[in-house]
Length: 299
Image (cartoon, rainbow, N blue to C red):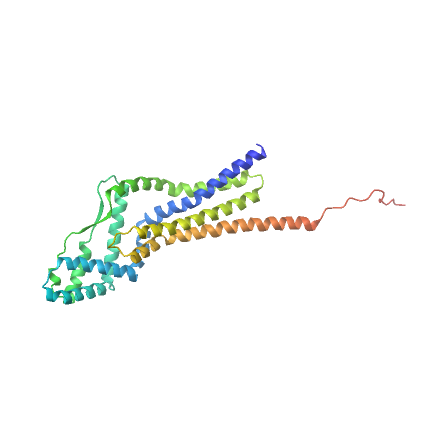
């Protein structure tokens, strides 16, 4: 194989490896970060104590309760005040954290079940257990009319039907890509380096390409956050949604930073070793050949 063909094939393989590295990180994060129930619950559990998330949940639960409880006009102010204080106080209890974990577990299980099955229709979660917890706490605090709060099976839509069909196709692709994309990135990188005419230069190119891909992945995470928060319904708190987005993508951001540092480190080490080898060769200097007629003749 000619050197030109080897260089061309090496360049193609290295480019493919640098493209697959961030895509592999993204697909692996989706499958093993969001798709795994235990990891998802561990990610969402700390948000139960996040101030923005608690305020958003307290406001939503309070508004829902007040819509169902009708009192005389002169009692509306005191009742609203009691209910809001009681709900905010409830978000600081162990019962609230238990309800938070249960609601997240139910939502995650419902979404994953819908993505893996061929069911039709929207994905919904029943919030009756959460309402029951709040009602019991209000009654214990002697809030007026707390016993009149209806505990109905209120289904909250987590995923619309039209979104489910599109996401299901992408999910099935990610189930395969989550394993093979990272493996393919490593195989292509090694093959490109071994095939290169100058392997040190190929290592440098692979490291820099991986760093560029990691940087683009970080930019995509930031852009995704901005697009997500700009497309929220008017009744959803942007700060709470931002906290949830940051928690879910925290591992992906760490992976992108890790790939960036790894790529730059590999490229820097290859450059330094190349410079050191050239320095050693230069310091050794060319060997001088003996001059003609300088050979001594022993007596």
